[in-house]
Amino acid sequence: MERPSLAVAASRVCVAATLGAFASSLAAAQGIDYSKLEIKTTDLGHGVYLLGWQGGDSLILVGDDGVLLVDTSVAAMGDKIKAAIAKVSDKPIKLIINTHAHADHFGANEALAKDGANIVAHENLRQRMAKGFTAFGQAIPPAPPAALPTVTYTDDMTLHFDGETIQLFHPANAHTDSDTLVHFTRANVIHASGTIGGDGGYVFFDLSSGGSLAGTIVAEDKMLSLADDKTRIVADEGDPASTEMLRASRDMLVALRARVQKLIDEGKSEDEAVAAKPTKDFDATWVHQGNFVTGDTMTRLAYQSLKGG
Ligand SMILES: [Zn+2]
Image (tube, rainbow, N blue to C red; front, top):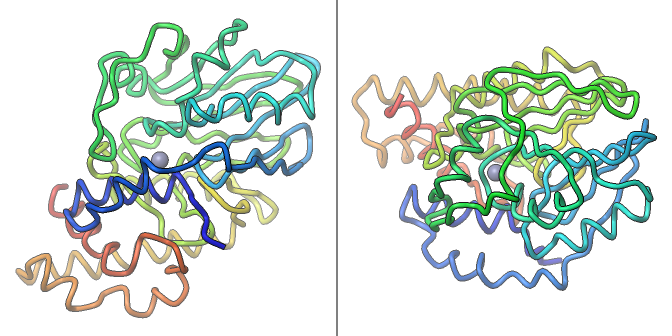
């Protein structure tokens, strides 16, 4: 089935901005019919639920204190997120965490925080939202005050809510420069803030939003340090990844970094690096149908990131 995924479609636009190779995808991203998208709710245990809509998937934690929501989705999906929450809790949304500066993670902030929720995010995300910024080649205007994070942090933070301990960590320059990894310690669930690929595909780091290959490896190492063999790792779309898959992603990225760095050290141009096919033995595992990050795209992103760093 053709799946109109915002994360994938929007990321295509981002790659277009970065690589100049996918210009036609802008229309596809703008043409998403949100009225047709449905939210699939998955119980991850201990009051944590995944709200999946094939885009910037959300997590909720429900309990006596109320509802904690990780990522509010795009503005057009706000009512559906609200309805999905109402099916598992009649309590109000008290806390919102925005994981990073892509609009499918904070777009419905104003609507979903209006009953008094505090919004927690990394300091860089608040700054970007307050000033306005460009992501995926599109200008995002300054956010209204009611949509801005009310609580920010720089390195890490711990929240205690609904009997759960929620640890927030900021990996610098990973998927973007504003990422928050969210670790639900009792439920054994981590929201990866885009630092692992959806549906088991190649991970995408958004160079135009301050992301990098090196930072993504650091983020994956951080998640591995938090995980055991039963941890569920939530990507932007698809079923949660296993720790085994996270480890495989990390090992692939480390190997890819070494290969592309070698090509750079040999003086190869970006096109020559792509022609050398450094991802050849990875592609069967990490390129899926409909996944916009092909092996060649991954090589270009790695090359640009290592050159820039
Ligand atoms: Zn993202």
